[in-house]
Length: 385
Image (cartoon, rainbow, N blue to C red):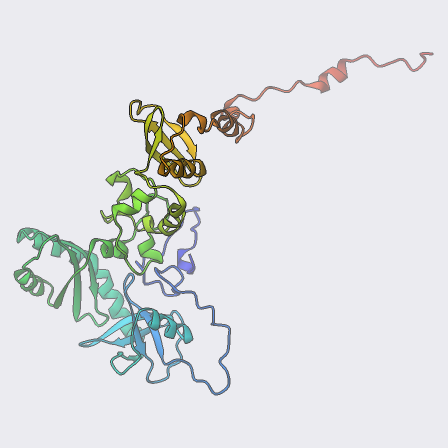
């Protein structure tokens, strides 16, 4: 954690800033970009880039123009232009890296970019924090209203505008929802302008955050900005079991990390024979049962004996396929089968060494007291010849 309020407490437990992504120093926020140009000065005569990146609640980021040439640094709280009124956000990036981010996200540098009004005053910050503190209670009350109206939707998050005049409700739903009556009831109950925004299940997981099955924070809430489609073919290419409970993330969709190593697997599979390849032998036809890309090994079994697998090297399989194209058959798979079971067993047996895993559970042996023995031992006579 980068901020002082996230440091460890006196009891040794991490306190946590509990700001839900609005940390003042911007050191423990989601999707924070490291400014590696911060200690470099601009060439003579070049003006700094007039746009800055501002982050609002959770991972929502937007670009704003610094028309008044304010001296802004990362972590400054600013009042920005909104459709009506103003919003409060935290500056996350300044300088030339903003130009790179705008090009990456395909944001044109023109007059349509909203501007920054001013640095937030203490009154602006007090109103902003007061609205942020009301969000959990309003979210709970809005869910109760939606349940009473029997709407098939889930209100996952609420975000107030900096001036407290408007609240945006983020929801997920399977089908289209008629929430006109819901907006009327919530506007009457909260006395604010309501905006409903539907998001996908991946965006919901990005906003809420969490810990994945790998033990780390979700990729979508820390560094991942774009959501590419993930199909079951990604799992098939990587020889993974099609188990929905293991392949699905917290959003209920296939995990985004299934695409991370997919290109490497596809490149490695170019030199491999097809999974549907058949080997013609004198003992019968053999079918491919399994492929190991890293060991470059394929397992084949005879049609009449599918339970017995024979491990063949990739080069041997390609050689046999070339022979089959010339109408030549090998005698049997046993001639080319690998027999590395004993070597693998020996390698895995000596990985940890000869130490037992329960060696620390044994009671310690008491050391013999040699001092008593020395005291009781008779001294040799000084007059002994």
